[in-house]
Image (tube, one colour):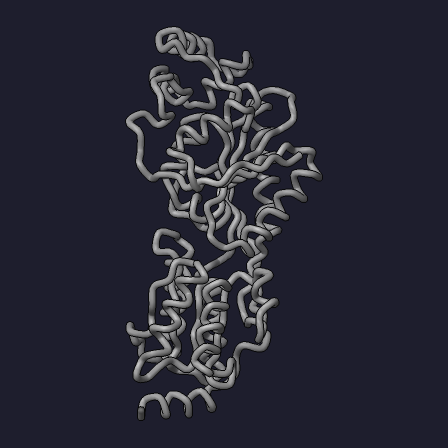
Length: 371
């Protein structure tokens, strides 16, 4: 079953208490009892594999703090249908479409209740996460940029729920992560472009707050260095993973006195925007300029020319994230600790019609520089 949440933009402002009110949390009880939140959950649910003195400490802390167990703690040990929330705050509709399909398929297969919740207008993380947990949510799937935000992971951890990141993520404390080797994928794409004969290669960076942006930039730089090519910082332009930011970045690159002969954008949205900007300037892709992207969303094969890009198995990544939460939930119910698991899936360089050798592009650049 799926339930769709409203649209919202979360404030990054932290509250003085992580859960947004004065009610004690499972983490508060764990600190007072000098044990882990998982141990507190076991005591709450009457499990026997807890030492008696520890159980007494937990019960004393619960009484002292007037703690009332939330529904997430009961769900983690109960036999009711597992409820998972997919939180999102991603500007790419194509990326989200693939992401959602994977989650829906696996949730349906496992009979998991799935809530899809945008985070665009919610006043703070604590309020949103607390509301979802009170509604019975026991696990959270966090795509970029939420997997990069430590506040989100802290809120979920404090509430005693499960969190799985999709992507490399800067934040720590998740119960699992599903990702690809972002660095190597960007290295391979840059090497492919260099192999076509290009030396002046522009690069459009993604959102600087996301770990994926950093890995992809590093891959580009190291491929250029390994090939012995000069790294021209003026050819590296900041984007935000949005189509509009790609338009702005591409215009900066194409207006240069000596523009690049190829542009590698950090996602397909910005690559598609680069193609559009090239067409606006009466340039042919790929004969005048090569353009490559990253992700292989539906957009990559729906524009003209179709994009050469890195295929990130987004749907499978989300499927695996749902599976991770289900397995972690089962371990919790069995009284076992859950250790963070990282699964790295293979990517693939997909060559289509947006790349070519630099012969004609070099002629264009020469003509532009002589103007």
